[in-house]
Length: 194
Image 1 (cartoon, helix red, strand yellow):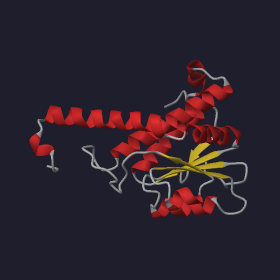
Image 2 (image 1 turned 135 degrees about the vertical axis):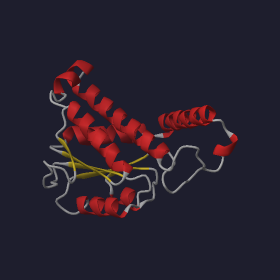
Image 3 (image 1 turned 90 degrees about the vertical axis):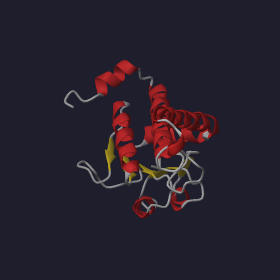
Image 4 (image 1 turned 180 degrees about the vertical axis):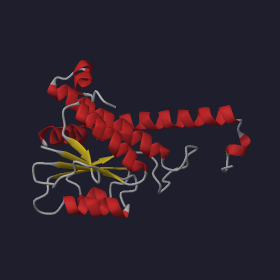
């Protein structure tokens, strides 16, 4: 059992974790730089292709965001999956890393930042991280990462993971509005074989 869990009944502990995550989302809604998010949505709208990268649980967030971006009309692919292509100046690359220092995330962001590459976008909790410094746009998600910036009842990186997923959904909604898309349009863009 983790520290602090011994003093709480299971239902009380579970409820406290969900409430903490809900509070994290409220904090993100208040503190995220929404004008920067709008600029990121614009870069995604202009991109020929959107490549996404994340390591560990950030990979799952990148996969979910990539799927959502395809729903709103982007040609999105997860790096390392079939369909991955050369990254050009007409493309966007989203690198998701809570710490902003995961070696593979830093490497991918660095490759994207090389001449001839497109727009590099970082989703991270660390504004001064290597990934944020390499990015053209860094969206700082104010949530606990593996660096354990604040105490948490939620497991390890859960606050950042949940918050990054929510920020991804907000970016998709900004794209939807910019393109005049509705939920019905998303239904039409969803795969019919899943």
